[in-house]
Image (cartoon, rainbow, N blue to C red; front, side, top):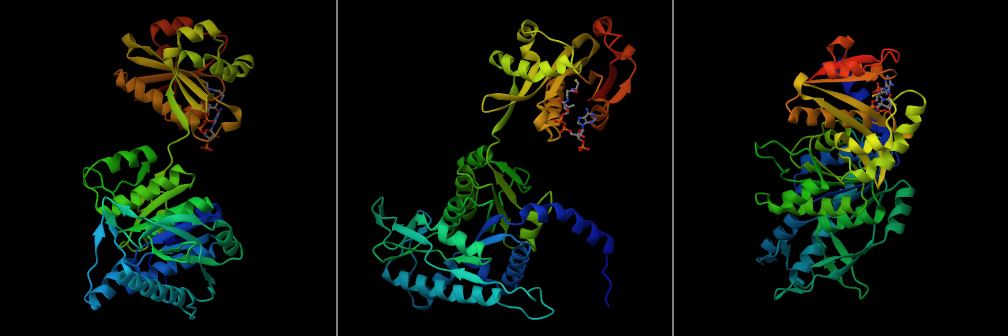
Length: 439
Ligand SMILES: CC(C)(COP(=O)(O)OP(=O)(O)OC[C@H]1O[C@@H](n2cnc3c(N)ncnc32)[C@H](O)[C@@H]1OP(=O)(O)O)[C@@H](O)C(=O)NCCC(=O)NCCS
């Protein structure tokens, strides 16, 4: 039997993937790809094997495909020309025939590949059932700036109930870039539009779009994470390839209307889908909705919320008592994490400029939200504040959270390290431990 070249690495990797395997079971992913993905046979077969693995892990899969190069090829063979306007094909009656042919052929090919099951292949025992159907209702794009798009359409409605039923039955749903109108007409759609609309209608956990080029930063590095706001800003700038721009716009619209996350993965990168989904650093670009919880400097109107958070901690001696009045005076020192107007966590930074240090104080996270990283986020915000003020040392006094500070890079110090002013206020009876961190 051949041995693995790096068995330890394999085991480590497999274990690292475990949390994702748990998290993804039963989730719905919509995966969209253009016809160019299908055109490169070897790569496409591997891509489908990866999708098969996702299905085997209990992920509910909806696949949406396009057929641009296939339609082009058919029109070329018939010596007919493709016409585009605003990045969309103008689908006349001839093109529509090519669209139908391409969609039919691709459906059969994809279904055939998903039906493989030879022993000694990654598809052994897979037995994937594929459902395809008239899930997409379409409407014509119409006439835009004098251009009649004819049989080019956009998604009008997705039959999410029918799709969900197929997924419930354990089938993979395959949706082409084609939609039907109530008048019985056929429309050619952009696959990105179909994928986004399906993800939205299903309230999918993820929308994955396969692209040729991932968005890159100024130094050419792949932008691995974008919030909706950052994606929006990127779309306002020049420099994105048109298909990447289109994919980002659809991904953005999806996350803004409730799809958990959108990911762009590179078509030519081997195993990019698995890397993006099962590794922390990913291999593509993840687009997330703007965080609903906001970390921001506190304002006077937050005083009530902060008091509600810290009073129980003051009562049990975890925090030193601060009255409303003192809080109001010192509000500029506070950072808070807010969600929909309620204060979930707070921390304060008191600079001692002459001593070149600052105290991190009044750090509190709502009990039901502890151990979710809120404390750490506030610490980072206070560190950033301190650095901005050219402060290089941060200290904290605590009676209950010693180990939390140690885990955050503080070390215990003698009360003598406190700035003079603060030392005179030090309450020896309280016996707080002093923790110090260099920034
Ligand atoms: C201390 C506190 C601010 C930490 O915030 P948090 O958002 O819960 O913590 P984070 O999510 O950033 O960090 C979680 C980690 O810290 C550990 N931790 C949390 N509170 C701890 C404590 N009091 N002592 C030791 N470790 C603690 C958790 O076990 C977890 O460890 P893990 O990552 O190994 O699982 C929060 O527990 C709190 O509000 N406590 C009451 C107020 C208090 O003690 N404030 C500090 C005095 S200034």
